[in-house]
Amino acid sequence: MRSSKPTKSVIIYLSLLLCSISLLFTTSTAQTCTSHTFANNAQFSSCSDLPALNSFLYWTYDANAATANIAFRVTGISTSSNWIAWALNPSGSGMAGAQALVAFQNSTSIQAYTSSVASTAITALTPSALSFQVTNISATTTGTSEMTLFATITPPRTTVNHVWQVGQVSSGAPGAHPLGSANRASVGTIDFLSGQSTAGTATIARLGRKNAHGVINTISWGILMPLGAIIARYMKVFKSADPAWFYIHVTCQFSAYVIGVAGWGTGLKLGSDSPGIVYQTHRNLGIALFCLATLQVFALLLRPKKDHKFRLYWNIYHHCVGYTVLILSIVNIYQGFDHVLQPEEKWKRAYTGIIIALGAIALGLEAFTWIVVLKRKKDNPDKNAHHANGTNGYSNGYTTRTQPAV
Ligand SMILES: *[C@@H]1O[C@H](CO)[C@@H](O)[C@H](O)[C@H]1NC(C)=O
Ligand SMILES: *[C@@H]1O[C@H](CO)[C@@H](O)[C@H](O)[C@H]1NC(C)=O
Image (tube, rainbow, N blue to C red; front, side):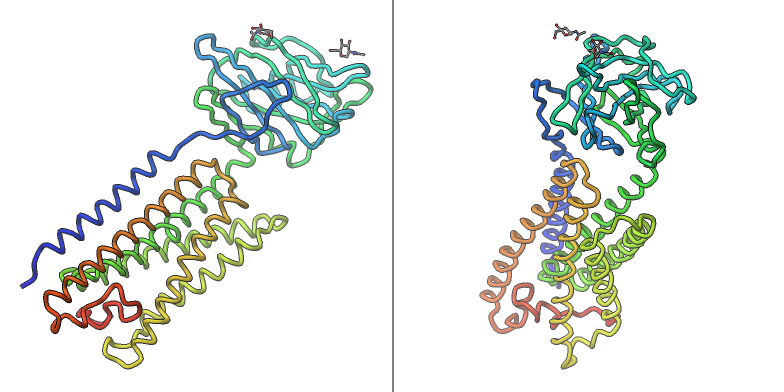
């Protein structure tokens, strides 16, 4: 009785969908770097926004020579009274053993030199040679609040711990630095080869949780939910996909909801762990989304039978809330990208690509559905008149569904 053709089409469309998604993940990985241009036109192949002390590291690694041209830039300081330092620590992870490049403004000009830090007990960064070669060390200031160190170094390994610092100049020499949270968070690891710099132990746990929050919520609210909506809207046009589409839709949305609530929970925890930082819009949208999605799940249980006179109103409600959740989810994911996580541009691009692909697929399926429905009407005008589902808004297939009530 049922032809296997529509089932095949469904499978082909779903595979196309998955293919385009995986394609997007692999293609949109273009590297980006901070838009800063140096006054001396110095250029670097990699850069990293360091997680503390308004600091930025730029470097170009020459694998043949095993040298790295680096620039260490600090903003928001007083160039007349602050010193800056950036160091590799080949033997440890903090200050003790750090091989530092130091710069500060002395009475006549800006002075840049190297200093090997023997222990945390030192109170001044006195000039000394480092355990690796440093050439062409210099420093510049931009205005009165920005200082940059330049040097060519021969790092002992391509992946090394690094540490950076800002302190006050006292009696013409760099004095001890403050011990605030930013001064203690300024540690990390740098991989000269891959162009990656990761945050130090102090901030890595929190950054990890923030990333997890971003990934979980993007997948659940941002990808699974729209996918579930597309399945519901376009799969049910195939009579042979009935009632399968319903179960796939429920499974998709329910898993998205469960994963999404877990992601929402990580967001609440992150918020309560940092009372000083409140992302008001992101937070409010998140709470609204949780309420609407929960409503959607419970409304499923209160769904009137398909021939009930209130079913039409339930359908209208279900579509309105459903589409609102989709739109708000996408808006909130971009809020997270732009204001909270600020990940590398490639992640935002990858997500934008996925959303465009889903939109294009929906558009294609919309057109395809119209063709199928119109053809069906033409072939069998009387019998299938009420089958014009998938394209006519709220009646949208619910009237023809045969799956048992949940
Ligand atoms: C200041 O720095 C310059 C450049 O490094 C150096 O030649 C000069 O001796 C320094 N002056 C003092 C007082 O240390
Ligand atoms: C140091 O700078 C000079 C002049 O800018 C340049 O010719 C030289 O190659 C640099 N040395 C290294 C090791 O990069």
